[in-house]
Image (cartoon, rainbow, N blue to C red; front, side):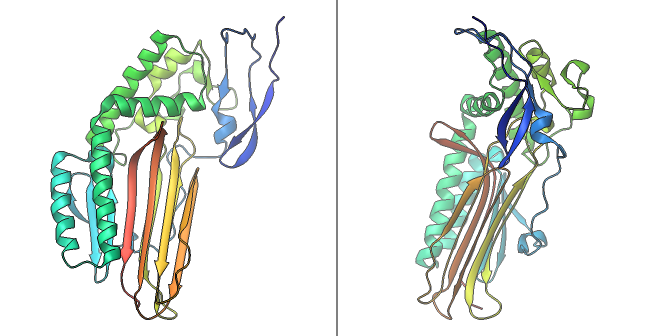
Length: 322
């Protein structure tokens, strides 16, 4: 007995339910004979590399960033520090220089500030170790891609895909997520991958062509991160804001994450945490004229088993009340 799929299915994309056109295919208990995924239904109306603008209130937008080591930049002001970390670019030199930098910062740090720097140093060491394991990162990206395009690939096809992803990982580690070389733009899709309405189609018969077409610019989203911690303005206190937004025209995507916390005197509101796609945001505010501290974090990552492979993060802390 042969079952046929409906022509329109409902899926969740970016928090919304949309119709996705699926070519009917024969169903076999052992193997799927064909599968079509039209990405235009998921990504309608979205530019390939145009991320939503981040809020203008972040001081990171106009601050003069200083490069500490490959993949690590920082910005300082009295009582405030912000970090910009691109894990694919981290090297042994990065870990060593950041460890020296954090030791200097912790020499006169409060307990909260010391905890911040310890967390950041753990993160840099962990992400450097993950990105140094090329096959692990390839597995994370393969999992993300096939999670969005669930084709029943043969082993030969999976190996071809992994070889292509391996090339792309090496480009990420060479250029970083924000300076990837051009290529793979949607307007240059081969005819076999195009639909009449300008969308993109993927099936078992066209998958080899898709692998050939894959490039960093088409594979990954463009993400904009903002993390700001600062004193309050209306009255003494501390506040933190984190925002993450990614373009939705890429072939695969992971998760964006934000978290914030703030305290001042006896005002200790619970911390905020949010993770999702394609945007995430958190804000924390506390009022008081003593004991002020606030922190913010924003990041973009791929999940594989119990590991999170980040491509970019922003973090910030503040220890002033006014």
